[in-house]
Image (cartoon, helix red, strand yellow):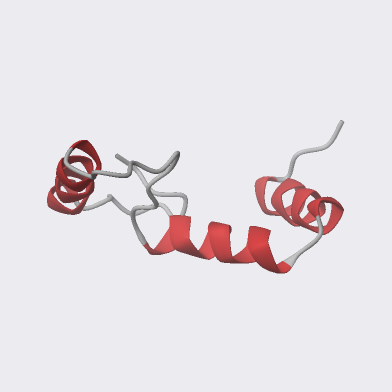
Length: 64
């Protein structure tokens, strides 16, 4: 798996989270894996949706 920062995501880390998710007595909708994903979640929680959308569009060079 390639991360958004261009590096490879650690397969063992992903496998561990999948294992934990399968065995979680109260499963969550999402499980965050990796520093880049954690950074995106943190940004999402700190911003309004409009600010987050603008930041993501800029980081991906995405225009309508």
